[in-house]
Each structure stands twice: as structure tokens, then as C-alpha cells.
Amino acid sequence: MNTFAIDRLHAREILDSRGRPTVWAECRLASGARGAASVPSGASTGRAEACELRDGEPSRYRGLGCRRAVANVNTVLHDGVRGRTFATQAEFDGVLQLLDGTPNLGRLGANAVLAASLAFARAVAAQRGVPLYRHFADLAGLPLRTLPRLTVNLFSGGKHAGEQAALQDVLLAPVAVQNTDEGLAAVVAVYQCAADLILRKYGQRLLRADEGGLAPDFPNAEAMLADAVEAIAAAGYKVGTGMALAVDVASSHFQRDGLYHLGGKPLTSAGMIDQIADWVRRYPLVSVEDGLAEEDWANWPALRTRLAGHSLTLGDDFLCTQPERIRRAIAAGAANALLLKVNQVGTLTGAAQAAALAREAGWKVVVSARSGETEDDWLADLAVGWGADFIKVGSITQSERLAKYNRLLAIEAETALPLAG
Image 1 (tube, helix red, strand yellow):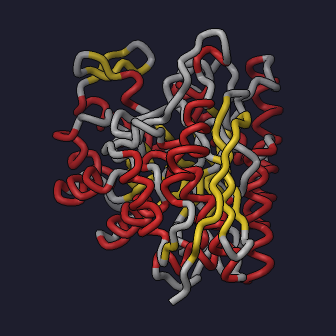
Image 2 (cartoon, helix red, strand yellow):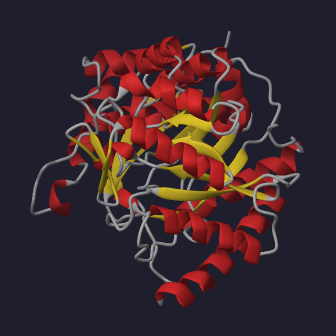
């Protein structure tokens, strides 16, 4: 059995795609192998997520600095693992969690712990002499079989675009393509048509959200969906069979006092389910993310039943990549797809456990980036290694998103793997 001795953990503060601080970390093994990684941060966050550590100093980055998290990597985590030998990622991550000592990584910070977890994985892959996607597959005990299909931000609202429209994201899902290269070409064609459409309709073209989605002042959620369909047709693709859509409703952000305030119109949970079902009937939606609020547990099973056979019922804020919430949702029949965000759980081991639970239940897995990203591309390797059905990393206009797409293209060229079915 290979073992991996730690020589040094080191971190520093860098900036994410929103100009906010985040954590970069490097792990150096006794063999001389090194691995480095940086971690993302979300805007639309679930209450059950692992806890980032921020500095809270108003005079510096409005309190969002990460110097405390960086210091925790350079002291507590470094001192706790230096000179120790680990046989597995799970063993390493377990020590990180013990050093933190809280269930949500709130003492040292999930941003500190995840940066160390990812850096160790990269260092081990380097020592083994294998690509990172192969190492991730080996960690999960999975063969390399497929590449994830794309879901790419077209329009954005909600928390990602200053609350301009109720829907957080409307995404493109190229379905009649044979590979990632074809998928990206199709997405770019539709995006360009959508930009022209937005200019004609709203007199706005260059307004973009955190993840690169076009974000004019849509009058309502319906307009976002209708404009997306119009852009698909304008680009010459068949709506539904050539290019489909996915949507992130992010309902928790407009639920108040038990009612959903969608465009100013209050709806009960049953009314919200009716609205979503109507969208699925009229638009080619392959996936509906967070159609209900994260604590509306009683009504999620009805949503899944209503959409069954037509669209995935995808949980993000609802599940927060937390194994205990996934188990509860499986038992309740409350969803059939997991949006996997590694920083929601704080370690690679925790994320792998979440993905395994979803797979065992027959769910689909969608590997996702966050609104605050870096140019690091480890997420593409993880999506391939863990056999994700879809990947969601944002639009096609910003370098922190394109880094992931370009990495997928490189992996596709190396492996010739087919797209997931």
C-alpha cells in the first residue's frame, strides 16, 4: 500500500472572481511531490452548509478577508499533519476534521479545511504519477466511463444578479451533441443570439451576473424562459430535442411566512408546485433546482412526483451536499438528483460520501461550481472522476468558468470518453 508523508501545508489569501478573498493552499509531501488548490465561495447558500471563516474586519474587504482561515492552515493544520503518514484521503480528511473539532468546520473554517483537502489530493496524484481525474476515480472506487453533460448559464437573476428577477439561473443543456466540443460550440451560438435578443428587447447587452449569465432587467420569470427559447430557435437549434433548458429557482430566497413571493404574487407550496409543473409543460426543462425552499420538507415529495418522467428534481440549498440531508431526502422520496458542491461539506471525503449515497439511490449527480470561483480547474477532473451526469460551472464569458470548460476539453482529448447518457 502506498503511503504519503506530509512535509508542509502552506496557504495564502487570493481573490475570487467577485474580487473577494478566498484560500489557496499547497501541500508538499516528503517525496517532494506537491499539489496546490484554491477554493470557491457561494452567494446563494443553504443554511446547512459547512461554515466558511471570514475575518469580520469592516475596514478590509468589508469583513470578508480570509487571513484567519489562512493562518489556521499555516499553524493548526500544518502542525497537526506535518511528519505524519497517511494511506488514504479519508484518513487525511479525518484528521483535518478532528483538528477543527466542530460538525460544520466552524472553528478553523471550511475554506481552510477544503483547501488543505484538495491540495493533499493533488499532491498524492502527483506522487502517483496519474492525472487528477484518474486519482479522483480511484478515491471513489469508480471506473472512468463518461464525461458530464453541460448545463451552462444563459440568463441569471436572484442572488447572482442583484435580485432583478425571481429565477436565479436559466441554463442551456445541449442534448443533441456527441461531445463536449460540440456542446460548447452550440452553447456559444445560442449565447450570442441571446445577447443580440437582449439588446433589441431591453436595450442592454453587457450586464452580466456573477457566473457570466446575461442579466438585463427581466420583467418576470416567465420572460427569462420565453427569451431563452427564442434564442435557441434564433441560433438554429430545435427547442427541446436540440437544445433544452434547466432552471435554478432558488425558492428559499423568495419564501416568506410560508408563502412563495414569485414576482410579487404569493403562492402556497401547492401553488408553487403548480407553477413549476406549468413551466415544465410549456418549456423544455430537463432539470428544476431548488423548486421549493430548503426547509419545505413536507412538500418536496409532491414536487418530485409531479415532475417525475419530465424533469429532474434537483436539490442544492435543499441538500447542501450533506449526507444526513441526502439520506432523509432519499427516505422521503423528496428528490432524484443531487447538486454536488464540495465546499458545502468541506472535505473531499464528505463530498464523495454524498455522491455515493445519491448514486446508490439511483439519483443523478450534477457537479457544480460556486458564484465566487477561481481559475483552478480541479472541478472538471472531479466531475469526470466521479462520473457526474452533468456539470454546472457558469457561462462561457469569464476565465474562471472557461478554465473548467477548457480542462474538460483536454480530458476529452486525452480519454475519448463519451458523454453521460
